[in-house]
Image (cartoon, rainbow, N blue to C red; front, side, top):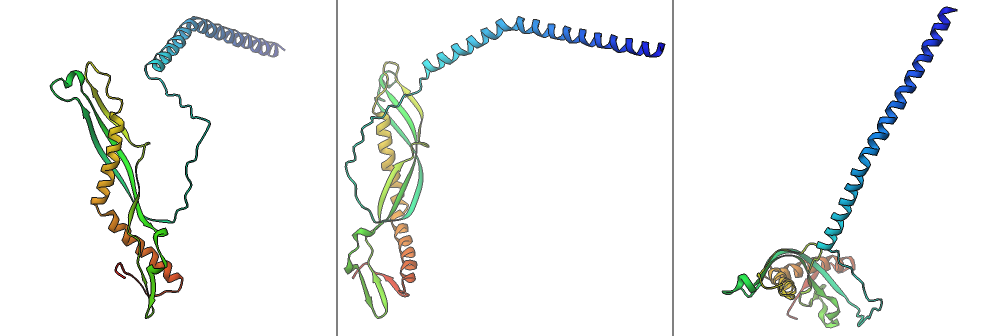
Length: 224
């Protein structure tokens, strides 16, 4: 009987002690939270202020497209694209880099990424451009041409820009750099022989096409 009573008392004492420890811990946590609450409010206010300052210093552009769209022309195409170049070109554009360049000059370094696509325009082919002779199909293809030479705006960027102390910079300088970059990308592709490679690819593709139609002997001839 005494042992049972002692056991019960021990359990009650442990329960009281556990409850006391729990309440003490909760009290400490609430006190700590109350003590740090003002600092948290200050930190939140500071973060909010930093965000507002960042938005003022580096505002995000707002794009509002006109709800009215004008389609000027629709044209059917029959182009066979046979080759694509991906080209990177660094362009330096500058203005006013004379004696007073430090005050009125403007200079930027533009990293251009672009693509050039070439092929043949099948719409230019005429019935007279194909003839059958002695079991051989002779085909005269239109000349290879560049269809697209344009910048990839997601990858192209202004790497650096240096404006004079007394100028805000030329608003058209980046546009000029982009136009020059497109011309240089086209020029680089031409110098590398994109038209010749495009013609070879077109012939390789069309040989398979004509073979599938039953023409086993196909020759491409530019001088009918």
